[in-house]
Image (cartoon, rainbow, N blue to C red; front, side):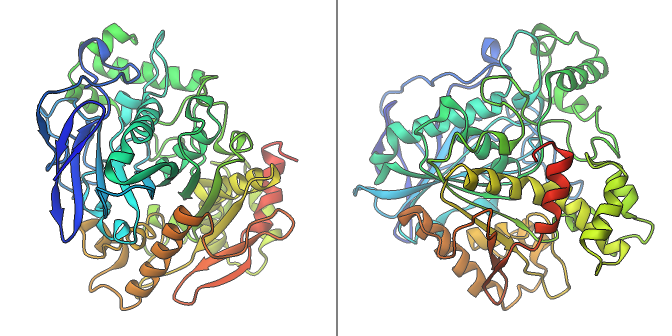
Length: 473
């Protein structure tokens, strides 16, 4: 099974009628003089390149201590590759969906088993997954070097899709970018970036985080890492380090209060990133947008049961609201206990408000916008950030999915997974996910649960609190 790209021919393989291609370079390996710099085109090759195995993942540590390492010392940096699933490689005009993985801009790879896109492609779309640089390799700030290399990688991958997807049966004018967490924020930022204009027509974003750094904080983070590595905080200092040496110290800036999960995020550079994710989506109002969140996002980051000493004041004091925000939340949600209120506040601070503000800004600018609230819980009552991802890919039995869904797989998984995937592929094909559009005046959201309904936005009482704190009113 052979397809011809602009750099050369590639040979994929058949999986029950789907053509699958893996590990196709979309940019040169970021090694040597290209290290810590924006991606550049890959070189062409002669003959037919084998495209049956995934490429090298980006350098990264295991996401959890109990999870095997996906990148190992010596694997190198040749990580800028795409993968394609297509139901009709000889055809033309199929809608295209391009997946952006999450991972706190610190981990992630397209080769992770829970991102196998076969079930999505079987709905009649061409699916592309790809790798972009994470951690310091992708988002570390260095003087004299362009920031946001991971975002530059994403643009290069979308440009590859634009140039080549017709060779796999896809329509380059019918591209939907979809992603979760850091991948979702990346998409919203690219919606407003001139360099990404015209590269995708629609977007589906799950759980947009309020994640970005100003240059001063990014400089401080680099200084801490450079000190831990014993090098100067310059390109020359870091270019002399192996990828594994960078990984050994890149978490040095983590702090239980100010940076508990990651030290990395897109940096405001005046080029790709002008500010928080909701600031640029007005410029991308011509991109149709589906966005949403898991209802209790924060439970993925808290012990179960939630410790009773967690208070709204404790949570609010670590956010842009300050401790006064706790009392504002008590007024907005009088029915909640203090423990539930703390979870509510943390879920808003981490993902729900950023996602809602993206929807507000996009719709207010005249964009076609839809919002969802993923409220499903597994039979043990578990929920939280990323629980929605297995439903999109229809894979309930990966290591990742079992952590989210429990084992055995709940009987309710199949029907809801099919419904989500049908909605997403319908949106990619027609621009309609199948529920009422979001407007700031009505704030209707889709509720994804065993019973699929529509409802006024449940977190609407939080919006004025955050808009005031962020100077958006």
